[in-house]
Length: 236
Image 1 (tube, rainbow, N blue to C red):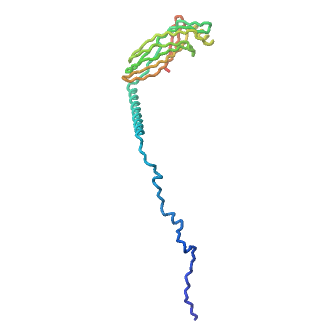
Image 2 (image 1 turned 60 degrees about the vertical axis):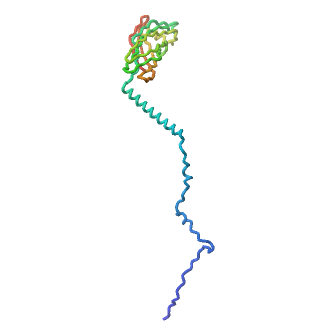
Image 3 (image 1 turned 90 degrees about the vertical axis):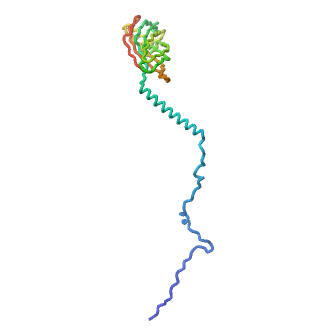
């Protein structure tokens, strides 16, 4: 038999592209997981600054004023709920139509008197009428204006004020002049009275002011002895 050769094969050799003269360079991917870089705190956080004392004072003042406003609102609400203030009432209790005269069938002259009743129905609040004005209208045409003297009223008081309103040479449109003449013939003249009053209410040491307005439609008989037949008043 022929003997087999027992000679072993040499292991294969692999060539690399690295130059023996250059040091080993790790792959770039090896440095990707080396850990996150730590940013400088000075780049992210602004330098600390102390708050100005003026800003603190302004903030404290705003808080105090807000609390005072809330407290004042609560006190006002409690006062209104307990005392239940009411506006004074204004009414026309009597009226007389003394004269109506149309000059040249266009210019109105007239004389009418009213008795106005002012009542303060409040039981704990005194009032004072500081500004009082009455306006007389025929339809929507202003024909007379009259001011009243200021006065004061205690709780539960009523006061009657007589006023006289004079119309002098007020130009009326033709349709209104004809309507007024027809009303005089029918013995039923209709006027409108508007009043605007400034009221000051006083409760203890506190006081407040407001305006009230009243409208009244009055029906009178023809002059010279015209009297009040009907009235209808309401607040605006």
